[in-house]
Length: 112
Length: 114
Image 1 (tube, one colour):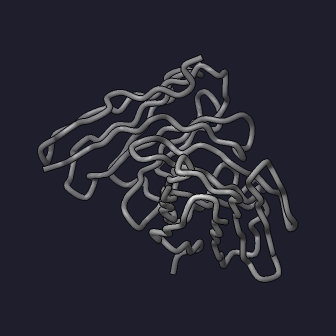
Image 2: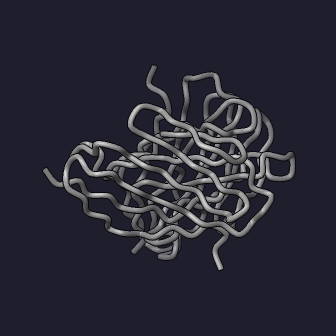
Image 3: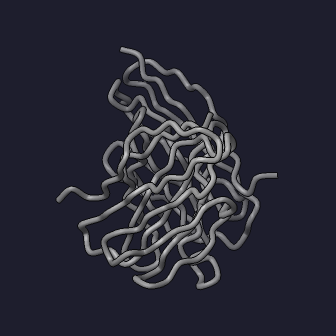
């Protein structure tokens, strides 16, 4: 099993550009999450999806959109990137209510 | 003020020493407490998971939760250089209104020197 995979690993954008971060899991988990990690801030939840077909906002959803394409895949889209979105983005998945989350390797995004 | 406070370190210890990490929190509704380990440029991985108050031991790792003081700890005995990583605490209420919504500490960087 590959676990949770994320693409791309690295990305540099210019302000105003758009991009989609991809996440897939092969553990048949119901729930999937997108976090951002910034120095001194810990992990902050952007969006989550409790099950296929549902998505909900987390702590810091502004500037992002998500799509739960199917049970395996959960994508995060930046429509108009801003320097404040420079961060490391992690996708995670879990069974049920999420007390044991499995994380992907992360995407390092820089917005110039 | 953050709901979860964690000293960022770095915490440097010699090999074989006990590493002591802790987090404080303000939300009395938190019921589930986790510790994650994160190696440099990797995703976090779950180390320990505790429900409510008490102690839990797993090999060299011991997690403690004191809900009356809103304080959780992780101890690593006989520390090894391979334990060098950032350790994140996380917690959640577990109820339907906090479903899947973890609060993470900022992480403590640990360096174990040979």
